[in-house]
Length: 596
Image 1 (cartoon, one colour):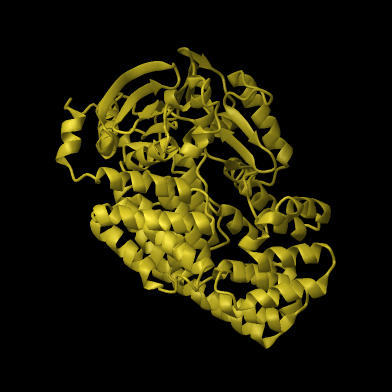
Image 2: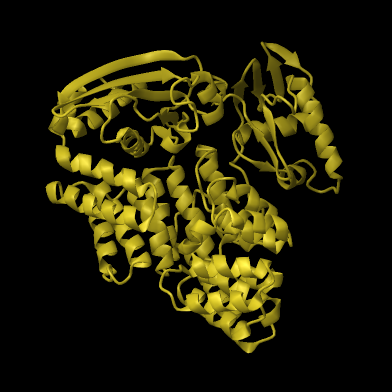
């Protein structure tokens, strides 16, 4: 019954379960079992509510905790003004020597809530007798910087990204993205700044020098909080042995941080199934190209993945990335790439070679959801979490798949678990909040990255026309990525109903739109009061596997079509599908990642 309760939209997201023990951060030690706070060993007086608040924060460290959840937890049976919470936060900050302007512990997230940022390398949960079983320790958090040096093929970013992906397959590590690493000064980054802003324990950096015949790699492993160099290793090899260096780097990091017996990493690497040197180079070049997803780049990347796999057909990551390329090209160039089975065959091969490959699970999820199999994707990802419980990428996939099934609170819970593991991980939770009509949160989680559509749509939905138009004016060169949605939204904001409807009609039959985008276009058609078009787009969205009855019921943009029998039929079908999904997931999915 707990899972059934969780999957209903009426529930609030809940944090990780509580546990009595001793939490240490900075000079403080919080003993929840003894109801005591110490500072450098001396007792600190806390009012009961302040103690409860601090306990909630430390148990949910690095996670966004909403104001609603805090007020419900602290005053479960009493109505209080939000000012009470603000006063309690201020008192706790004073006790901890904290301030809103320079938050060391309690960070305010405007309009949403708070995060407790205790300097994670020093925060840990221990039992009173200091007996910590190995499985209770937190995963080691790493970030890999692009390797510097002479790199004529410009593969240093892709090389670092591939090392990150290999380390992320191990439960011992949570690995931040290389893209996050590029946000720091490439030459003069400060380890402590990286520790505090990327929330990592260790930094992997180095140099990569490639010539016509040879390659020299220097690896450095740095303790982020102190800047201490934990180890430095170098390799001089032939150019076609670059794949061996990749394996050696991974093994050296494992040996240094997991304290495995010391062995020669090159000997281990050479004894494993390794990618052919030229195949690995093709793989890195393809990864570099596909990082910018244009039709031209993805076409070139696809050819390079094929070249890689012709030389090494046992390389599972290349099969997964090839599957993603095939899907993209079939979507945007259907005339040249008509074979839908090519995508499925590539992913089938990846999973047959490595059933637990996180990369394959992450890349396949949106493809499977767009094929109308989001429920199967949830089951698959839940099983994968048994092997990789510390993978933010798997939880990110669940954000997407759960939303497609209309399980919005499950989607939000999956997002919370993802950002608890990696505060910088990207998830699609902005779309989940948009579906629930929470446009402020949708804008917050959509962020300031190079978005395309949702932030402008959220602003338009709040009648913030000038802001939405300003955003769209900077993206007109990208409207071709989703012309029906982008041009019709732009026309709506400019008051040109005829042009907006024309763009939607042109897009209605195009194969390039996934079911969720068709739902958005149906919403725009309904706002134009073009009833038949709105119903047709809505029906195609439902047929494609997307369901959000709560949006149909609450969103004012759908008001013009709610009186029709066709709308009522679609609404009832969505409700039935969501109920079937909820019951099936309660019955079949191992949802121990949810907390109700």
